[in-house]
Each structure stands twice: as C-alpha cells, then as structure tokens.
Image (cartoon, rainbow, N blue to C red; front, side, top):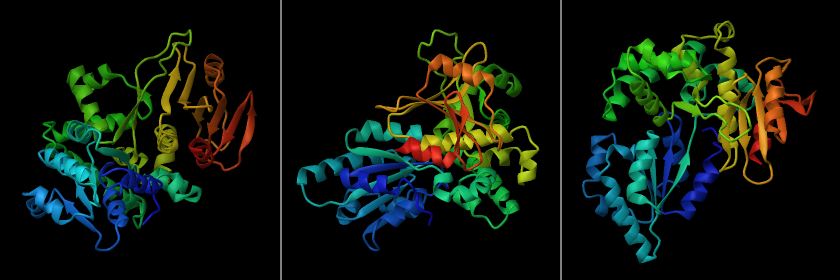
Length: 387
C-alpha cells in the first residue's frame, strides 16, 4: 500500500473523536486505508452497498454494542441515511458511559450528501477528513510524468501499461455515469452528463461560461449549475473561486473549473500516451490542474485558494491566502522547462503585492526569475506550503 499523507491525520482524528467521516471519490483508496488502520481482529468492516452487510445492521444498536471496543468501518454509509439517527444515539450513550467503546469510521464518496446527513444527525460528534487520489508528494518527483498522464487513482497509476490504465479510467467514468449517479437518486441521462463532463475537460482550467455550456447541451443555465454541483459533490470537479477582495480593480467574478484528476481529463478526451497528450491543447491546463490539486492537498487548514484576473487580463493562476504570518502567495504554473511568466502575471502581482511569487515548472532546480519571482518544482513548493 502507498503511504498516504492523510494517514497520521486520520489516526489522530480517531484518537480525538468517537466518529470520523473519511470522504473521497470512489477508488481513491479509502477502503484500503481504512482497513489498514486496525490491528487484525480489532476492526469490523461493513460495505453498505452489500445486501448481506446491510442486513447485519437491521438492529444497528445491538450490532455496534456487540463490537464495542473495536474500530467499526461503515463504507458508503450515505446509502443508508436512516442509520445516522441510530449512530447519534449510540455515540451519546457511549459518551455518557465513559468506558472504552471503540470508534466509528464512516466512508463516503458523495461529499455534500454525506456532509449534510452527518451534519444534521452527528453535529458535534464527528470529525471530517478527505482522502484524494495519489499526488506527486506521495509517488515522488521521479514519477511526475506518469502521474500526470494517468492521474492519481491507484489502479490507473499502477496499471501494467498505458492502454490498461486508459481502459480502467474509461470503465471508471462509465460506472460513475451509469451506476453511481442513478444510485444517488439523480435523474440525469448518462450520455448528457458524459457530454457535459467532456466539455469541462476540453475547457480545463477555464473561467466558467455557463451560457455557452447550456447552449451546447440544449439546456438552461439552472440545469448546467445542477450538473456542475453534482460533479463537485462527487469530488470529481473543482470550482476555484475568483479573488473577491477589494483591489481597486474591476475583476472577473466567475469561478474557474477543473476536472480534479488529470488522468480523467485525458480519458474523457481519448488521450492514451504522453505523445498524444503533448500534441493536444489541453496539455498546459491539465498540468496546471495537477499542480493545483497537489498544492491544495498540502496547504494548512484555513488557507483560502482563488485565482486572480482583472478586467484588463492581468492574471495569477493560484492565489493562496495563508492563515498566520505566511500571508499571500502568487503561484503561476508553466509546463515548460524554461518558464517565463507572462507580463500579466507581473502586473497582477503589482495589484495584489503578494509576499511570495512562484512559478511552478517540471524541473527540479530552484532559481530566481527576477522581480521577486522564483521558479520551483511542484514538490518543493508543496513542502514549503505545507510547513
């Protein structure tokens, strides 16, 4: 099993809280990580998509009492919403008894649905941790190109060849559209949602133009917003908000949209090899999205992330507002081994006056580009950002 950055955080949350929710997209490694936490015989795993395991929880209170003192893992817990009220009662009883009672680890792949259910029923009783697919900090800089092409889902990244990896991602996309989305009670034609997802991949890292998307799909703006909310909820798409603080400039206000895993971007566009990718216009935005995801995985809690674009076109790919003394960082992403920021980046930095100015590029050497800007690798910047 890959050493996952979030594992010590998850262990700490379990020590501090009687229940923890581990969020993440399907196949990101939640089950593997969860089952590795408990000693042999010290944990119980139930998959609530399995009728047999759901039957075990017909009398959930008695079942959990019978396994007191163990780590009980409930996978895809949002499939059984009526269970949350029972869990609330069990947790309250355990708190009052003040005796060793084990812990609950709840796994789910629909962020907003699970957050809503757990928030309503388990408020003050549960902590939340998010597990993302593998990133460069976990696989190492030497496998950066492979990670970029295949994405971070473990089975895609570890596939025997490029063709096998692409086929896994195609199957993953089809399964999500044809099986998982309907199971959430959402009535969206699979082919329509595929077209929408593919359009987002073509527009990777672009400012959201809901009217254009609606026109292409033959739907209205509210429907586009609904589709986008769905993919964000499933942790497959990220909305990066625009910088909103007063800078004395007229600013673009619409968010940028990224398909969160670069491998899914390439699968949606039919790009199998590195040569296919390098010859496609999505190469730069795809690489930018991978870097952005990694940095957002490692920044401290409370960090605000956005992008900056003025009405005159001055732009910064990623603005990080850290809590505490780090202040404001401006980050530009350039796939070139000879990174040269555009003039608009320097002008945008004059607008915001960030404390640090970075250009992330594929090389490993760190060096100055002048005017307070440094070129740096994604891995090195992630280590600095996470300190």
